[in-house]
Length: 508
Image (tube, rainbow, N blue to C red; front, side):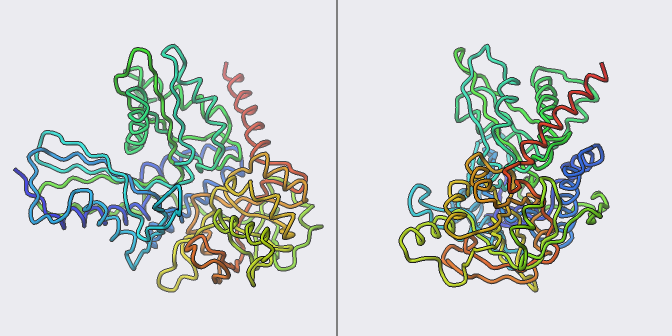
């Protein structure tokens, strides 16, 4: 019989969540570094360099890898011989107390992203609770805990299908993955659940992402069962798509494929696919009654020493004086360094702006978008002497339905966000001769270092979704959609898919 103290569990949970907010798993860092070394597309290589530099900065500064500090998912295996000492809370309440303490820690405040009443008022709970908890009673006298913080951009790309038993899982993945766009911030991992029922397959997919990266070792020794064969087949097929880092085109889209399966009905083949993004965050600990189980910091020498410098072809742009004529000269794939003032705004702010304009009330004072740029971001609150906390881009396709109206009514010149724009967004950009720029998802702390001042100018009640005015100095971005509507997220993967096919033919 093991006696576990309530406070030991809460402290261990809080410690793990703080730890994964700023430490990537070392195996993930090494896998991205390997992909960076192999990459032939300079745009994708630059994106991975920013991800790796950001990772080292976060490890050193103990600040979040990504501004989206995730929804907490916990897998608990509770030994049937465990007894709780002095417990006044349920196990679920203990988990949520650990989440609450982690996300409100004064030295490293994490962004609260969880909303109650999801189909109604969507009110922020303020402390990122509650967590999603999967609990299982098992033989033994220990508490085994696996915890992850899953970003919304990658979680939103989850897919579930009920295949026929004779259908090809590989074919479904290859057909489905391009429809997910790049909002899940590749390079990352794919978690795939096979079997059971629909909800079981989804849980299996999520659980598989807790496992360490070992695809290279698997390839070296060779598969020993059908699941391992599938992992290799899916990884090779996905990387042949040429989607690449951040969807810019390239050799590496995924660094590992994880699969868990479960017996299923003879008439069924449920398959769930959930991607993990460039902010892969998970930890494991075991409580045995001897006290809290605290995480061990990794050795920073395991991080590659990579630098990113602006090349000779990089354009420096003054956002305070930029003109439509200047913007019209930018080409897809161009790298820009932005300086000057920009506004921010995400889904909730766009909805409010549209409602105010339609009502005739107009935009609040300080929100003049004419000739300006808006950055799709919801930053982390600052700590100590920071101007702003980590402030990476959010998925831009969520703003597509507002884009034509906002461009038409406000004279907005450009937008900055993460990943591709959809057909509706691209057509609005082409129609209004605007431009869309892409910042690297997964480099939030690095981006925040370019922000020299920050102030809320409208909708403070929206919290992190308020409209801020940022002043930036040399913020790196790429031209993703130019004024003619050409998208690098369409042309890049198509080009690199062809390159990969040619290279494969040369090896035959």
